[in-house]
Image (cartoon, rainbow, N blue to C red):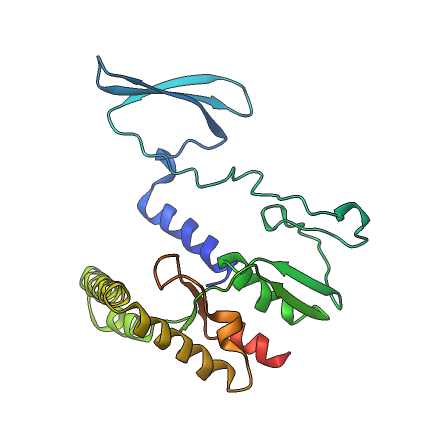
Amino acid sequence: ADGPSIRQYVNDTADEYGVRKNISFDTKIIAADWSSADQAWTVTSENVKTGAQDKTTCRFLFMCGGYYRYDEGFRPEFPGEAAFRGQIIHPQHWPEDLDYTGKKVVVIGSGATAMTLVPSMADKAGHVTMLQRSPTYVVSRPAVDGLANFLRKILPDQWAYNLIRWRNVVFQQFFFRKTRSDPAAARERLLKMVREELGPDYDVDKHFNPAYNPWEQRLCLVPDSDLFNSLKSG
């Protein structure tokens, strides 16, 4: 799904289940202290607008802040960057008024963000190049789950949800176990799917064959082959 669809889904789900009242917005964590005597955490938070601090105690604390600071993202420095005459844009700080129409664009990286940026920019940009240090496994999946939509039409919501979730869990477990028990066959299957998308003239082994086995790192899913379609269009 694209960015706006994901954001709409998150907002709709939050409204449907009333989770907003349990979220502290505009708040950052200052400290988290564990007490062996009390067997509890004391979390100190601060409202970024007012500066007011608050303390909360809990027995279980889940750190879900991500790998990098969300408000900054990971921003490496590039040798010779000062001499570059174009724009350098970090997706975490994407300008709303950015106009890349007709421009030559280089997307650095081949992770999930790059997989969505390249096809979305290809229509307006003059040319888009994805620069990767090492390949990533890429798999195309339908943007719309036809079976899930069919079940929602003929079954009560909870029944449909349970069946869809069960189907997804079983499929993921089967695929994961298959990749771990026979990684060579799983690799060949994934590469065959890419060859079927791009045709015989594309060097799939060079650009889509990582040095690691499937599921040793995350696979990248692209909706309706949009990345492959962009590559084939040049």
